[in-house]
Image (tube, rainbow, N blue to C red):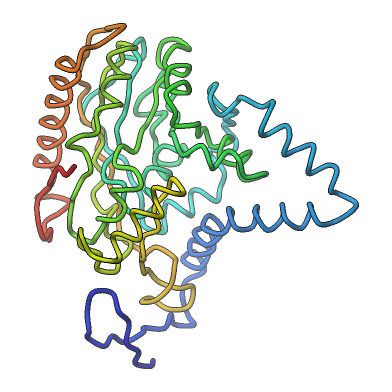
Amino acid sequence: QRRVTWGLGTSKSKMVRLAPVNIPFARRMQTLAVLTWAMLQPICITLTIYLLLNPFTTVFMLLYIGFILFIDKAPVRGGRRFKFARNFFLWKLFRDYFPISLEKTVDLDPSKNYVFAYHPHGIISIGAFGNFGTDVTGFADMFPGITLRLLTLSINFKIPFFREYVMAQGLCDVGRDSINNILRKGPGHSVMIVVGGAKESLDARPKTYDLTLAERKGFVKLALVNGAALVPVFAFGETDVYEQVDNPEGSRTRRIQMWLQHKMGFALPLFNGRGVFNYDWGLLPRRTPIRAIVGAPIEVPKVASPTDEQVTEYHKKYMTALKDLFDSKKDIYARDRKKSIEFKK
């Protein structure tokens, strides 16, 4: 071991704990699975650049990019999900690394449509992917007849090869047209939105639950337009897998992050996790349990053009239901919390 100093909101020195040589093979495979998951996007970007610069594949890549940009509308029409991909053995290892698990509180009627909302966002919504971007934690068995699509930023569907992988996992564009198309496919077709988004990721810290929700009402309006019940989902442990540099509101760091978010559409939190060969420094998430609790649905009427008052009414009902869900489980899964749930603008 060696002593280093690292600045994550503290001036204290920390020991970098190196991983021992005699780690069980199963744990090594779990770490490899998480590393593979983390590297898929940069690998796809690197492969794209290489194929564009290779004269033997340039034309192929230009045609593929043209197909992505001008022809293929799958990301906003339900995607191209594959059962094999969602049950791939890699995701079982990924699940067991933390581990990630799912808990339901009530049954859901498969003849209805639902807008699930996931909280908190955390740094990169690991629990959302593990529970709802795969089938390895039992969602399909717990909620038979519900075809759920996890939604993500449209930029993910502009990256060659990477877009095919995320669509195979059942992910779709988080835009309004995409949501409407999915909810209108028929009974059981539902969406999962990580409501807090990029802004909330800047508040993600261990043992805290600051949710960017007080003025996030778009998902409620879409639920009303489609007559889809709202389902709160709270994941304990989502904010515990990474630490983050201090960036209080009004600080220079936060101002730069907000500017970058405005320009690029996604945030850049300055975070620290662990490495492949050490437990204290790196970009891999830490082995912290993530337990997602699926709450009871909030029935909403179908209103073609909901008023602001109607949206606000059901938004308040939703926030109350979410807080009740958190309170019902906090003493089981968040006994060492630093603060309770807080709704922010």
